[in-house]
Image (tube, rainbow, N blue to C red):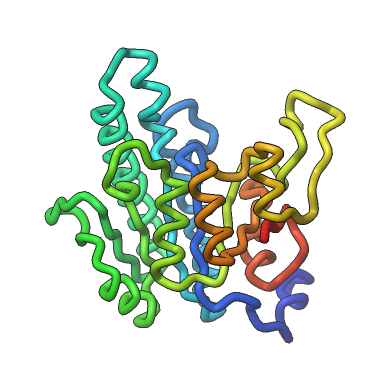
Length: 247
């Protein structure tokens, strides 16, 4: 038994049902574009650890590693709605890649989409999603909310609220929320905890304002943590103080 396994031996998870929000860039790994199979496998291993601890797990994944609707609409002059729908399709590709990685390590998984495409994923139906979770399946929500002009952050908050999650875990490339971009500003201050209203007032880049407002209205906490530090998903689930908590 490793030292880390010993830490969790006599503990129980703090959260029963969680939603993990992944950016599309989280699947890049060492690549500049697309999906890194090794990164998917690493994520699947971490999710499996949490799943085996008895936690009900849902995932929302972005599509920025393939196509970013807002940016591409400005760059190429695409209609915003068209660009956003293309971005939603990118999240479907990412969701299928994650499903494949999870099932390769023995975790039963269902992909549920807000845009119907019966050949590749189930349509999102709330009661069916909850039933999947109760049957110990990881549920991956794709295609955002199914509507343009809404981010996957908002989709994550909406789905987490609908299925009754205890917390949203937002995995990023930095170890929490800072007063400024820590990669550009050495004096950036890391916050250990924040209130929702402070995130909105200070315009901190946790999630977009719509998502933060929805979390605030529904008292749904957000944990922002470093995905690249292996084991952090499990640490957060067991209540260790990592990253930044917004509540």
